[in-house]
Image 1: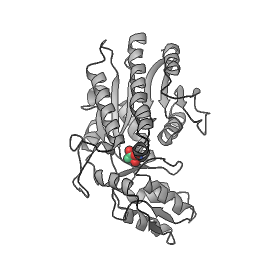
Image 2: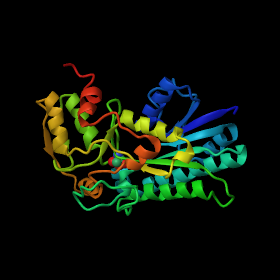
Image 3: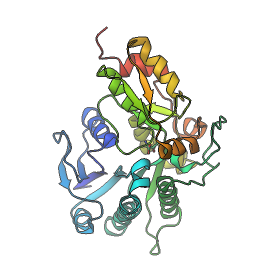
Length: 324
Ligand code: AKB
């Protein structure tokens, strides 16, 4: 349709930047990007709007001027920051997400289309016993203690309701969501997350700096690398709706402990060292999250298949550009 666009919130964030790069390299999409910070590279963006998803005037203008085929809602306050600033987290994670749901619902009214809505959820929706080693499936242990986990679960359920039943005027969205594990990217750094210890450690090692780790060496979480995260988003968004038995899917690739990360890094950078300065709040969060994730539903329904395991992630992605 004329004036068709895709809208990406949090466009200057870790996933946003990589998703926009993907779209620009693989397929030409007319992207409207919204963020409170300017993206490093705007060349692949049709229009950048510096602003907040809390500004309904901005969102109403986008609604009036465009046909929004897809929304990738990547703006969020992550787990550590959310515990430290619950008000900000509530505003962005709940009110901001609701604003974008309403934007998508308005498109159903205005343009008689069902906007596809991608929502990045998280392993933070789970609350398991420390060192729980059985792979966790989507319908288990969804009783999060953390602010961020509660926000993600609330928005998942709201999105599912708008997908299945619509709002009170029966307008609908096509809601699709992935519960991301920790994500490791070589060209960007996360901020405010609790799984950040892994990318922080890796980026320190690459800069030949030692790392002060805020969780213990036994701490273990599921991770993927950014290329697999982007691949997963594209796959779930391009899979015919009738093939998706669920709205929400787990994905994962590898679940190393901090010690496993250290040993893997030292194979290439033997001088690299870690010391431990434990942050009790952040370690408590990691201990509530599962060590391992069951992602068979994503593999069955939309052919999720990570390209990188722990070894290939380091050899073919993370250390790929390091001098031998
Ligand atoms: C965080 O640590 O808050 C995020 C996540 C696992 O959702 N990276």
